[in-house]
Image (tube, rainbow over all chains, first blue to last red; front, side):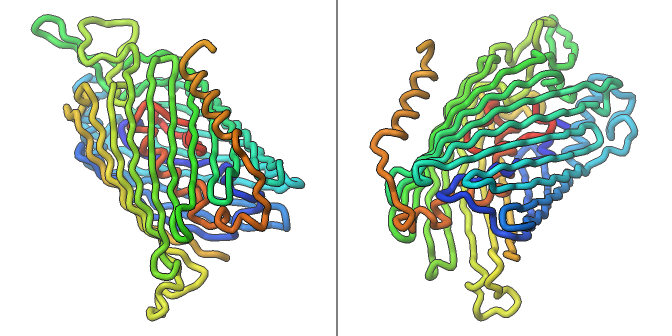
Length: 381
Length: 72
């Protein structure tokens, strides 16, 4: 469930641009792969379709499947064997761990006068976790479309039932978001975001193990996190057209919550056209600094009110580098197989390095090195 | 003005509203360029956002939404 990056989902809130128009009709297919130095490997192909059903309405359907490497699952359950939470040494309770997650999403976007209304629903299921999500967003431009305000509400109802436990628990998440975008000049646009999320229920990971040292012996307990969390963030980002063929995005985000986690994030992303505007090359870097949750510790000596070993809650910093390339299908004018003016090819490579102040409870590494590789295409219908 | 985040928030809001000049629709050629659109490919962004949500204790405030998983 939690130990592995099993899923992602983006609620396609209306992209803030300079106009309120429906997205292009398209089919998009992507293949993504994730690998890191703790032996986790995941591939997750996805496909989506966006189709207009009238002048002012479009619908989107999306399907994604995660396939997780056997190495990561095996490692996972071996750990639980240590706690004697399951009678099997590996493979979970039924010895046939489901390594596939399915996710289905559907959404509708409606233009109402000058404003845009969007409703998305999602269902995700895997062997130890299900999630239902509903998302609403509303965007309206004003001041001759120089400014746009957008508000969003996301509600998730999750069920957690770890394979090594006999219980089933709920996790509910309600998120409000707002953004204000402003054209500042003919070459500069800025966007300001605010975000608030209330999490309730099962907020810890039952596959993790907290080691309590008592003299020369040790005992192993399940993590205990508070069952509520209020999370807040704001961010600002700008996009500036440097030249006719290049732009630079700069963003900053500040985050804080009632578990006393605070963070600062800075990112810069440069894009440039190549080959007579048939190729877009993107280069990005992101820097992140975080303080630890108040109850997080690398060394518990007793069964305290809260116990946490999740590396996410440790003080840390991370750096991420990205190289991205978008090729217009017209670029392949001498290759009849790849040439198609309606197709856009995408390729992306990310390198991520995170260093925590306390070593990860499972891998014992302070440094996480991860690689994300993506390939995809978008076909304009 | 109770805390530092509130002050920073106010400063950032003001910074986005001061000095705004109305840009007419026919003057937005540069702004309508694909390289000038935030999150031009939301699905693409979702992949990265989720990977970060799982590995870091922070989320939100970046214009997109991720969720629906067991990532605490």
